[in-house]
Length: 446
Ligand code: 9WN
Image 1 (cartoon, rainbow, N blue to C red):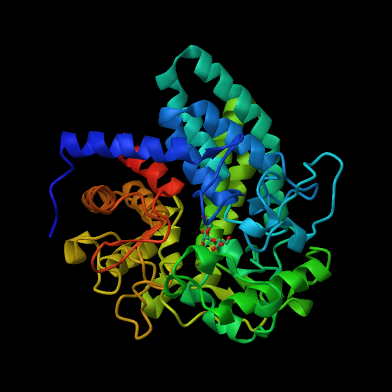
Image 2 (cartoon, rainbow, N blue to C red):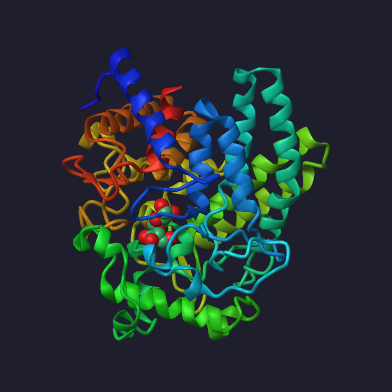
């Protein structure tokens, strides 16, 4: 059922409500994903948020990225959460006290986690720069300065990921915790997580904060959380060091979406390099290498999707998840893979809007354990659909990209700027005023 494009009225209402969400979620010099559940700064959220702030408040887009990269570690890792010292330890678990990261003289004392998230920031910085022309000559000059400040930091981030984090030695980045994927409880990790000990007594020692704020049936399970905590303890005990990871750490996995974003970051860095007077060639070359490694090691032809790989066992995940479609965003993806992914996106398993009237869900709709409410195990997420739409535009699927855009905008207009959405009814789930949903709505409207 292709729906008509949003009317001018709908568009202007949506624009205003989205801008209001971003205003509400600005907190003491940085953005929060949402006020209650996520009261600190998150890494890949900041990137998606910047894409939307570029239209309504570019200074905040740059300030937010500066706050994040101000907490970058000397080894180049950009932490997945930068803690706000004004927020009480009890307002998010696990908070700064639990992570206990090493202190570095040049970083804020309130600290961060030791994990990373998908490096969307180069793509975001390029998008914010590109929009600066709409705000006058001074904004363009300021944007150029910001790119100059960010460029070496973005390079260090890529070098950390493609260096220390190439745990499998095949030119792919490994994640060491499901939180690093940004797709926390995706079925993509089920097989690898099954081998991680789940010590439920940890939940007596450390109470979950999320379930005090959100509906427990919409969140990862206690067993998931026990494993999440155990994995942080393991990585922390090793001093957050990455040497020999696969031999001593319980979760070392190559995610197709994370690696696609790594390659996309180098494509964006090549463009940024041209603006700041650096050499774009090494970025294009690394983007080509990472893309080739994703295709060579993570493609599963029978299912027409990419799969995550457990580096410890060498096994590909048996689950068809939306992270297996995300490499569509890569310019260098071979045509046969593009065609196969589009066929999968249009199948009953992912059901493009022409089938469901709704954007693409996080997991195969026909899977026996598809769960319409539980976070990354079925619900619709706007950031992932935004990435997929970019891929469709890039590879010449204009009609499908437009269909997806319309479905996202209608959904957000009808249900609100929710964190995620029910894949059959479109009901909003999770946090109601979620920053990246609002930010990406602005980009889709612009
Ligand atoms: C853990 C902030 C983050 C997002 C992730 C999402 C969720 C955190 C949590 O919220 O993860 O990092 O506490 O559940 O899965 O993608 O960045 O919005």
